[in-house]
Image (cartoon, rainbow, N blue to C red; front, side):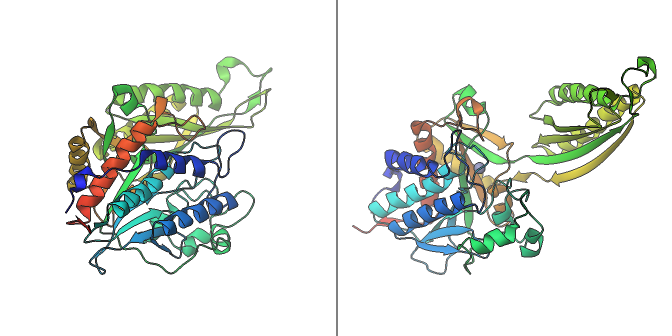
Length: 415
Ligand SMILES: [Zn+2]
């Protein structure tokens, strides 16, 4: 018997693998591996090779989710699943998603080298189309499919701006298989993508869950008029109403506090010409918060704010809900497992929610699920400047390994 608590991942090896995968799809600014693009497929082939090198049984399912299984003593037991995704946004950094998948492989390597046997199998997974940007699929497509929340018929309707359908790209990928993954538990290790851990100098973020999200579309309908001939005091300027709303929404987010964030992200003016008073403006607003009661309150206040902005300019306001995603609150046993293992390793911890969406929020509906965060430099992500130090990366990967050892049941070394 060896003490599993002494097992550690090989940090340098993990760092080098992240860097090697980061070369795939690399351009002048960052790397681009949109879901099921040839760059994504190239990265998948490298991942599959690394899985095979570690002796994992590589499998894929009908949605090209790819995972490698390290056998347990109980062949029928459901596996402990760890992972994330290796597709990226355009001009991405090299850590988002990739670090979680490759840290799973690093954990397997450490277990192999120490000849650790576990009761349950371990599966390291990369989900298809986490980012959602290429086909405007909304993201998390592979994990949603695994959970039965989307299917081929729905994905057939998702197309890239060039007209390529999600399902055609899937069928051409060479990664469609007939595997079926039934997780016992799921753990996702990811960069924070915000500045909280770095600002407070905390090593490990213990993720309680993923925030609820509402997207609203606000249409301001005023009157288009001549910019020269029509007087200021008789205008119904939709642009001005939208501008008031944007300023007031920022004030509202600060007033709501408790982690509320509001982003008026998209603003389209019509007719959008230099010499015409804007007749109509369509504004999208993204609001997120972990506590569902507070989020509902925030959405109601938001509607009041945009209506008031419209009234002040004599402009009609219509509010529609585009997307409403309930928050995912992870099970306490998984949250406290991550916290306990991080503390046993001597790391500082902070319980926090994730403002970004992750496959874990979908897996949460299938099995006990948790997440581990480590600091992102300056809170930056989805950009070439995204950075996590080798030390922080290694800390989180060691926490992941220790959690896997506990979740897979009693373990022992063969020697
Ligand atoms: Zn990610």
